[in-house]
Length: 331
Figure 1 (spheres, rainbow, N blue to C red):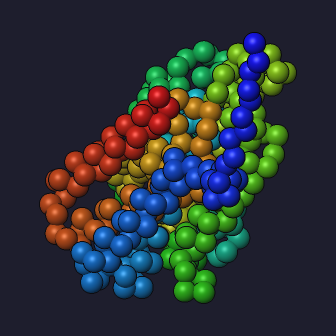
Figure 2 (figure 1 turned 180 degrees about the horizontal axis):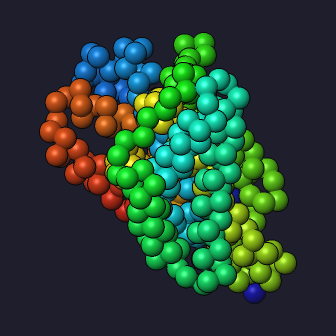
């Protein structure tokens, strides 16, 4: 029996379309959402695109955004850190007490800033040790340290506001360079550095591997405990940086209110930016975009006169939509 094979000739246009790179909508979804939000905000309020308003939005975003950068590593590795808000209060209080004890001038400020990063990293290390060595779930461990850190802060400050007496300390968070606030520059520089760490180093690949499947990662000679531990240290160090910028901007810290709900904003920024809560994948620039989206939403709600009691509802809906979109994308 003879079988006749016929060659189906493809049209030139179809061949061109097949050769074009496939557009991954999930990758660019946060950026598309940001552009749509900016266009809507500019249409909804004439005050949105005012340079001073944009600067204020970016400044407010930078504090939680810096924390979200560290949180990105934790979540990609398959963990979560609920203690970062309380950690902001504790590190900020200790930093101001230290700078007041060291006296006036720039050297006390520099030493106190360095100490803040070390203290933040140390508190993150405590979380890491409890989770990796104590084998406690990250959610439970950081929920416990969230309460512990806030309690210690209230104790050492007698639940009262701690004010800086150093005349130079306020220049850190309140200064400008080329018309852009220092916190915004810090946020962008850290984003570049962390992007390189995540995407262009062996450690970054190990973080993604651990988050995807920790057992397979261990079979690949990756020290899973160490990789997971370091993510919490990174998160703690970013908290130290953010606490310095925040407390120096205010030149004081309120132990009961400082960093309140920062953990929710940081996690929301990471999730909105496309990082999977199940771990294994995510990007630093997605987190940056997610933080900016949250900042614009908060700003627009204020400009439009929406009741502050309803603003949490809007933020919660945005988080739910982002998580649902991830869930459908994974399926």
